[in-house]
Length: 166
Ligand code: NI
Image (tube, rainbow, N blue to C red; front, side, top):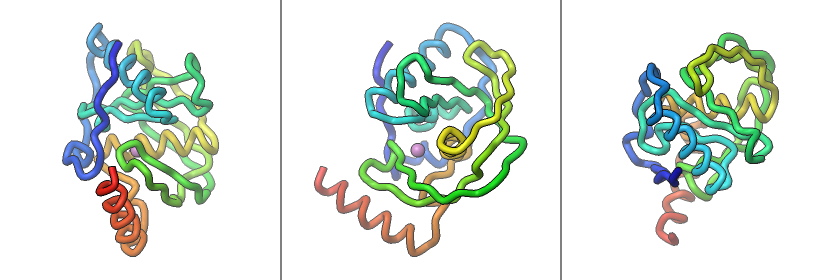
C-alpha cells in the first residue's frame, strides 16, 4: 500500500471526464487500497480517482471516517434522486475552503463493487452528499461549478490567498 499524491485546483486532470473501469485485477485492487489509505490520511470522507491523477470512474467514501467502513464505488450511476438540501462541502483538491452546495437528500445508485459485482443502494443525507460530490469529480466537475459566479470569485480569491501562505 502507499499514499497517493492529491492533485489540487487548477490541475487540468481535475476537469477530465473519466472513463469507465473495466478491469478488476491486482493493480486495480492496489489502487482502491491506496485511495482508501490516502483518504484516511488526508482526513477526507471521500476521494475520487481523478484527484489522484487517474481518469477512471472510481470513488471511495467513508461517511463515518471509520477504517473498515469504507466503500468503493466503481462506474457509479445515480438513477433516482429525491429532495434537496443546502450543506457545507470541502474538497481535498481545494484545501482550506468550503462552500454551501445544494444536493439531493436521497439518491439511488447503481455501481460495481471492488470485485466488479453489481450493487444497488439507497443513500441518504451526508452519505448521499459525498457520493454526489465525488461523482462530480468523475465528470470533471468541481465545487466551483456548483456555485454562482460571485461565490466562485470569492472562493477563488480566498483559495489563492491561502495558496500563497502555504
Ligand atoms: Ni472533492
